[in-house]
Image 1 (cartoon, rainbow, N blue to C red):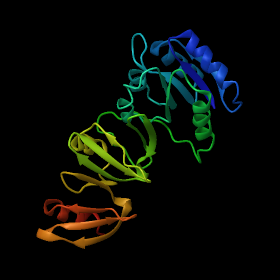
Image 2: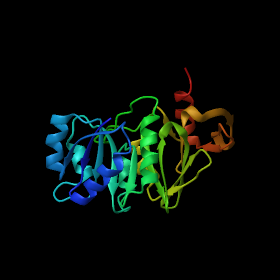
Image 3: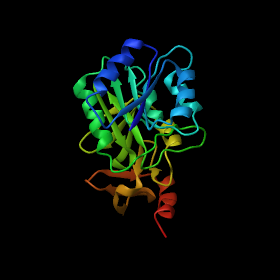
Amino acid sequence: MRALIIDDERLARKELTNLLQEYPEVEIVGEAVNAEDAEEKIQSLQPDLLFLDIQMPGKTGFELLETLDSVPDVVFTTAYDEYALKAFDFNALDYLLKPIEPDRLKETITKLINRPKKEPIAEVVGDQKLGPQDRVFVKDGDKCWFVKLENIRLFESDGNYIKIYFDNFKPMIHKSLNALDEKLDDRSFFRASRKHIINLTWVESIESWFNGGLMVVLRGGDKVEVSRRQAARFKEMMSL
């Protein structure tokens, strides 16, 4: 993997370079000190991977990604966790907090090496939607995950938060269900009610319910009521 390190702090670039020497799978092809410098070097060096700082003079790391036509794989590196929620909008591979711990970097490199195939990182702009193969960043307290959307079976509104159901986890993020619904591809995700969005690939069975509604059972046993208003649309989507 050809990697470009983008960070305005010389010592941070040097520290990451030293840490990456342990991994012959990663070739550092260059360094950039800000977004403008990075744009030029991404074009000329064509890296496969960016180690990208977020807060830099001029454009931020996020703004840099928005200017690129083709976005390499991205690992965010930052001294602040306050940008974690915004990283939800970018299909990043990982999010490393400075100072970067060697064991934490090892997890990231292992994840990169063991991927079955290259999954390009793309920013979400305009009407572009997040689909099953996209990954999202989820942060709840001190815990962080990068989760493929195909593994998330259910989103549930809880006040000003959303509970995200995947594996045995149910972390919560500060976001409205309406805002999330606008980002998700409606061919894969269905707004069952004011409180729920379900992943259609997880639907195991459907039962009639009160007042013309439906009860959907997901793989694993979660049950979600589809409102009467949405039931007709749901039947149409799930039929030939």
